[in-house]
Image 1 (cartoon, helix red, strand yellow):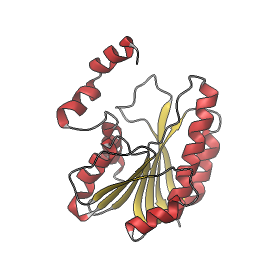
Image 2: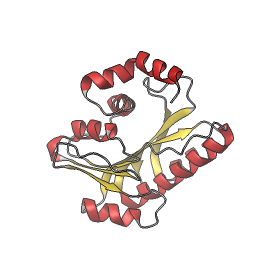
Image 3: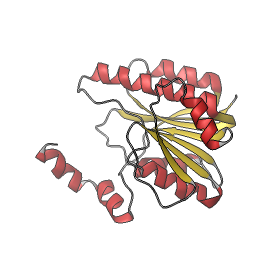
Image 4: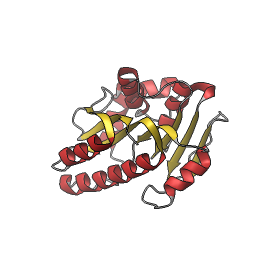
Length: 202
């Protein structure tokens, strides 16, 4: 990490807020802002969080679903335990063909919401990073299609690029509403954007 990056992070209002409120990452606010606006997650929901480390989205999801819901985090890295019995994490890769079955076995049934903040290792080459991110978004979509209930919702990170329109069209084949979202907590200079897809047709 460069000294400049560290200085910018210290000035970042959402980084400061995350520290103050006990969230494990500033990205917690991206999910919080999106849910407040589009209401795709609610109390009592079963939620799967792909790319969940270090756990900021798990914290927000538990805050929303309450003790009546259940949240399962998935990441290739271990996630430190959180203080709720209805939040669990498993070490797994979204590229694994068996992951959908593993998720359903853990959850006991299909789920209400799939969220995905999975990212590749950034190379700095825009076209390469776009392609890698879209592949992970595609894998996240395949998992969502396998584990979501009818009328379930999906929220996924993508990067701007030429293949984004085609990805949106694929989502529209399976969901009643598809929309691009740039939460205020997303850095404006970043190429990241999120797609919200609601009302899964099954």
